[in-house]
Image (tube, rainbow, N blue to C red):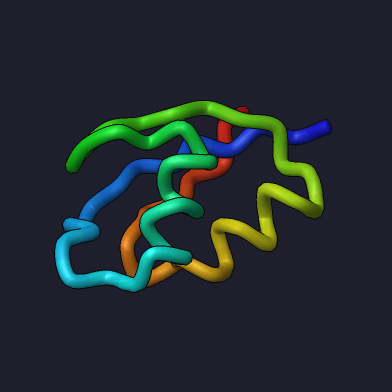
Length: 60
């Protein structure tokens, strides 16, 4: 399965609790933090919900 690199590029201050928990569930703890995860349908759905807060890159 493909891997993706997710980087948080915007703050979660003044965001809904749901978005904050989604960012936390992705493994991002602070601004400019990066995690590398498998591109499962569950992860892609979470990324889609917070796509305005993160940057996604495909890892080769």
